[in-house]
Length: 376
Length: 223
Image (cartoon, rainbow over all chains, first blue to last red):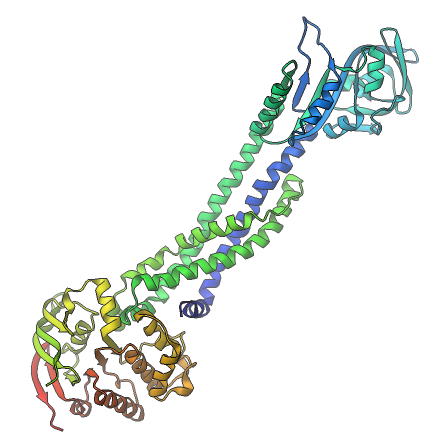
């Protein structure tokens, strides 16, 4: 009988309840979209931030004024840790070398690295030409725009690099504009740099790109420090903290908006329910006269509010998932994946909001049946 | 001799400065049909409301089936109304969005458990077998009042309180409702019926006549 009466109540007040449903569905759509963004966009954004370069550096401890080198085999051991937050890893061997092209000569920093990883971790760099595709390429190099200008290099030209009496001739595949010190460097394959250096399989440092919030990045650093006590593991603080602050602000903004939307939704439901409470005074008076307890009667109305929350919340969730994808693309330029966990969260929030909005219905408990039946 | 079902002792009710009932006393035996009569504003509906647990008396006692209604709290009054009283109102007071059957089942639901078959049988008894699924708006006044009668009887109340049940009906429907009330009376139900109509008043066992809140006289009808 409860469900039968509930259905009749819903059907009888469908016009007014449609307004409440609209308020709940709209609120749910925005909340679901923002919650999904909060869950998915944060992760996606940290990935996006990774185009800004590495945020963790592993290097040999400094000996005197000179930076030391470390065994290149350490890279394999880092990879064996299989840290889920690590999105990219690139070793670097830096040499202070001489470069010559025709009559132009200049002292330059030669950075030997894995081209594929360097490309992945520095996708914000502008490249004139193309990245060298093979990690072991011994014939091509990438050159920073300032170094290229000093040596008069253009795409396709060759240059000679000398270090410690050893030399390599390389063709320029791409000119890099990084907006930083890399603009005056020449990037060669790691084996080329190691041969020039004559130091075997050693590297100056390993740059890593770790995803996640500041605590997650700190966790990666702690694990690496524990695993490699002889090496220095340090964050690139400026970038990591700026990312963290930005992400915290985005999350704060999202949560503040969710709270605001919930409050507005509650007001929308409150307005609809207040009208409904007035409309139902006579019915409630009659139900009380027939022996209906306040508890029994209010339960009908709270069930109505819950039904609205569940239907509106589900509809809002579906719309919200599309909305989050749209916001993700338009605002953050990331593709957002719908998360099913947002559904129960949205429904729970909508039920809470609807029950809070149904507060005026509690006043029906004060209806005096004799007054209603007298027509007051 | 039937036992006393309703005992009204020196009962008074004031609304602000207005004295709606003033020291009214009488008794009703189980199975009696009492007509409460008097001009508008004489306190008839107030008396019914107090006996039905819809209003509290300002003074005196109203004891129905051993229960002093005036001393009951809100929850106890709710149970009292559900278990002991069957209301029939002049305005029918059916829930507009529930069918005839559901209106009867609603009273069952508030009492204990809704029983569709029993509710359906109650409506058949008042001649509405073919109107079970009709909404009140799809029923005539007489049919609505018959639904209200079926609703009033469904929980087997000790006392039926009818406040001008034929006041809004045409002559034909009035007869149908009065016939049903007579039938209930013959079946042993105790009925207190408010009416302006002397003819209906004469159908009762006794008439209680009120004026300006005072009990003027109690007249036993000779059958």
